[in-house]
Image (cartoon, rainbow, N blue to C red):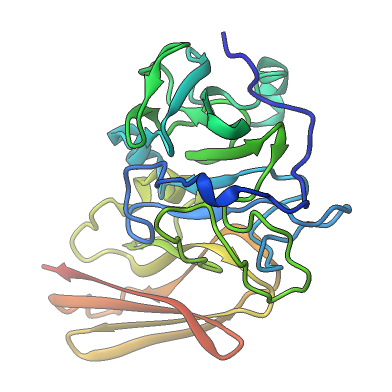
Length: 321
């Protein structure tokens, strides 16, 4: 049974005196930007709106932690370790909750246990770190155990109130939530924090490409999120569709897509994003020509554009027999 997993206290915008003595290491055994990404940050808007520490939209109202997300359910099933961010003592654990995507149908099942499977560590100086949504049966520590930074606590899962596999890391001092990216208040949007709690600074990424692939039809979003959309194409498919899975898309962004083959570029698309979304996908392509597809290599190029600058880009290739 987990103790002290959620508190009613919202994060504090007060200055964090003495924060320099407390440092955090990466809480997930993955490569940011490659095998994982940060989906959401702490909410700095004390009203009904939501702003991350850059005054950007990678957050939702009252969100109190940092979400380290995986690109697919396949990645979760393969196993990605959750690590202690700092040396401390285990104050609480919970395990045994199923890895199930949150919906209205299972709201009652997780009431009071929104964190899912998790671990709480206490550290000197009134600090606590909390690790939520761990995989069922993955928790490796017990109450009272002393751990060092980098020790394995469990694995990223899908337990509790979550719609995608991720670690929700909360940081508290004396019961108040603290943003590890901006432990001191920021007076104006665009002003960079004067300090961070990260031992090795973590760059803020305002959105980007999670994964991309080819398909013979526009895939279902559920298949993209699970990893099933990346199955191999059959010979001479009915269509050649390039899809891209993104996070942090903002209204006004533009996705540029280009597909080429053995005979050169044969498809281009310019797709404006009409709303801000935490996660989204787009797909475009061409039906099989009457003469069939020419054997050889095919490539897709994606560029996500914001304010005339490239936020992220991706290229992938396949070979049709």
